[in-house]
Image (cartoon, rainbow, N blue to C red; front, top):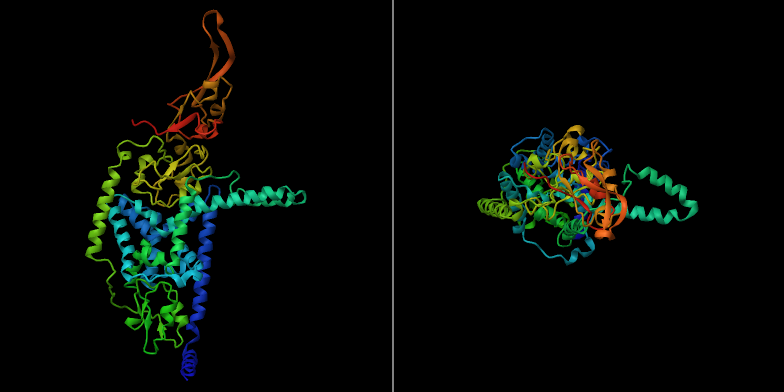
Length: 530
């Protein structure tokens, strides 16, 4: 009888429900928008290398991030015109609440697509108190930004995803595709097809030469950890850790559209079971916290009696125990000050790491106060020379861009990194001006150099130097061994390389191309001060 009564309620509710508000259709629309938004993010990522789409287009996802743009503004005390489009997300949030998280965020979409449902029955309940962790992280980021530090933006969801794609996923895809092509090319009748495929994807999608990054496992493991937290609770990252979600959640307190449960509710608990953020509370008549609701509409679709609506109206913000208060602010202030103090006391702040080579113009552009750690420059660099700093810059400069000449070189004909940077931490220099910027100086290790140590002919570094007036010159010498009458002349025409430091700009192509195994015989170091 109870089942028949409930079925009757569902039928009557369905009859009363206007066609425009069929929940299933809205859920399908949300999933379609999620797919389209994620696809757009991925397409912009793929075409963000030099020679791809315009820089002002490919860095739009990062410029839409209001937390990254606000923190950058606070730290640098400078407004970048392109960052104003983040106001679109702010306006969307004031109208529709955390719709960004439920409809548009690419990391949130991946977490929805990888729910790990098979293992969810083993999850443990997490207290709502832990939702305050993301608010603490948010406040610490903003306080640190006011003090000129942006290190904690490594936890911004867009930087997490973009950095993972750039330094772990895409290099792995390249290696897999390359290995498959080599295997298939061994089959004679497949060679034309493999060659045609390779011409289509390179260099448009994948690079001609393989790219390599340091610590790829580290970046992959961090992302796997974010996804793996779904084992504990659906969208664990969004619920408890995401600082951008916390920022948008606070704005959602005064959003125009908010979830509402009417008197038709039968307290069947269907909505609470399906809520991906676990914000629907039975003890509060199945109401939800507007700052935690991502407007996914799953609860409305699950409700058998159409008791859930999302009306547009002005309402007073409701505060909960885990929302930020004076305790959160005091803790965040203390953590930010203590952290910055520890960063500043690091030895690297007094004596810069000799291999901390920055992209052109970045060193003199207050990089640490502007860089949001998004990884756009890593992706744009055609030679993979720009990589995230790990130990070179200390914790204060964690994952800021650093040139690793042994991995790649600063292409003399390229200025893509400055063009694609969404906050101009790497200045958008014109090509001619970029070519004049000194990022380092090359130094020859005569004990490793083939010409100096082995007296063999090697002029690779001189040949590779791209400057019109070469920064590396060759000196032809006679090599003599022995003493007195037993002097023997070896290799009478050995040419020894010398670096002209007043010409060298530190592009690193000499180090990259040096044929010596392991550490190169010619290495680029940071320029001397003054």
